[in-house]
Amino acid sequence: MVSSGDEQAVPRDRDRNPLYWLLLVPIIVPLLVPLYNGDGPKLFGFPRFYWLQLAFILIGVGTTTLVYQLTKGRR
Amino acid sequence: MRNHITEIVVFTILFLGVSAVGFVAARWRRPDTLAHLDEWGLGGRNFGGWITWFLIGGDLYTAYTFVAVPALLFGGGALGFFAVPYTVIIYPMAFLVLARLWSVSRQHGFVTPADFVRARFGSPTLALVIAVTGIVATMPYIALQLVGIEAVLKTMGVTGDNALARHLPIIIAFAILAAYTYRSGLRAPALIAFVKDTLIYLVIIVAVIYIPYKLGGWGKIFGAAEAKFAATPAPNDGLVLNAANQWQYVTLAFGSALALFLYPHSVTGVLASRDRNVIKRNMSALPAYSFLLGLIALLGYMAIAAGIKPLAGATAGSVDSNTVVPLLFQRMFPGWFAGVAYAAVGIGALVPAAIMSIAAANLFTRNIYREYFRRDATPAQEATVSKITSLVVKVGALGFIIFLDPQFSIDLQLIGGVIILQTLPAVAIGLYTRWLHRGALIAGWAVGMAAGFWMLYVTPNVATKRAHFGGSAYALSHLGFDTKVTIYTGFIAVILNILVAVGVTFVLRAMKTPDGVDATVEDDYHVDQPRTEEDTPEAVDVNL
Figure (cartoon, rainbow over the protein chains, first blue to last red):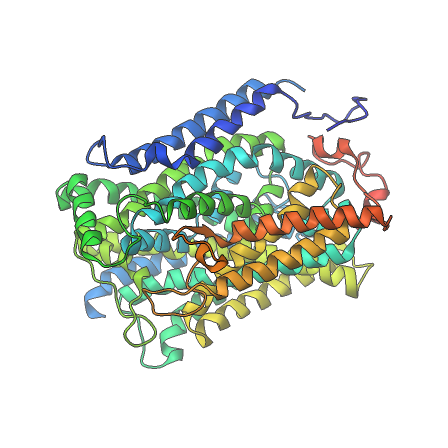
């Protein structure tokens, strides 16, 4: 990821920001099976296996949105 | 068939309406000329956030997905729910990688992933390997979209006595699809995706509110599924995972996520977008489809609770579990709304089928035709070749369905997921480093392919009584381990692939084997601006 560094007319997006490490959270959490592989507690009749994994979608959306918003202006 | 008239009428009207949209699309965001791959094959490389959202959503979440994932839950329970973690982790994983791919492709005018590999590693051979892998993996995927339509037609009672009569509606549907894709290129699926996704969202939201209400609530639905799985002798079904299949679940979700954006049609959707922010923004907006998919998956349990019995399959004694969702709609909805739901699935098949055929055609044009037959092809000639190839690809997919057992397409798609993953080192790792030697990448690919095929071949399926290609769960007991644990075949294959690529790279570097010229520089991976004349030095044309 080392570059010459001369910024010219062409805008560049460096993709170098510690905030990007946050993206690891929604990658790792949904792969931790013991976290959700069970029946209870139930939510609206959904076993934990189902409602918790659907809830992970919110973690994914939240994290990517946060990272995008916090990094988009910095070039 | 007489009972299904309302469904068929609604289905036909919506289907024809969408076809008209496909033809009109040629005039949408009209370019000076469509005779250029950037226009025909990538919609002008100028799609904004919303169009990209509908396009990629319509592309990745296919009709087959909507039919097959609930069928998986219907048949086996929890394991089929892997589709949810899979489509959660894909977006944060792809967030930065796709932005890099977009930038370097914009800077150099790449149309396909193989274009990138060609320039990055200076190896037409490696590019050919990537292109052929992409085409082979995509073909059965297109055929599967037809399986999705067929499940719907079958449920509506549209069947015939002989092969031709049975397949006639699909042949007509595909002929229309081929005609408007030929004419409008990527603009057609992009515009149709709006209709398709609106219909799908409508149907699913109604379904997940109305059907549980009719069935007595979610608790009853899960209870019925639990009772069904408890009564079967199969060890690996159930509402939650067990010790033997949870590694399969994790590796399948992870491996599928790695594979998704290696598929040529996903790359096509990404490269069609206007700038990096469109891609990054979509990585947080696309999970809306994942939520939808999670709800759709649960239709499989609703079908259990409603006592649905799947229709007979192509061979005697088998059942076509892909019909459970259409049958559920039929049981629960009034005829006209079932028709809307079927149209959503049918149209849902057309969008990905169109994009996939365009992607496969672009691969052929750029990495085979241009590379090996006509080095000096003009943009107009490229567009023409791509248009014709897209027709050939569709006829091929149709042939798969008409002349072969649909099971064959399902097997091939299973293989397709495993083999497309073997392009990971060259395409995805290649975006970050070219340390891996081009020769080593080919060696790793070959080993990954061979290992993947072998593992799929030795996997039986007890439920369908098949000795080979019974699924993607590779039992570690084959390797002599005393365990019931299974792991996703593609995951093992790509690990072997990477290990071989690294090992052979050390050898080739030690032998000082030439490793080609990199036509890209690090700055290319960060470009964020539409290409202008000034930005395109002549070197760009020499690269490809």
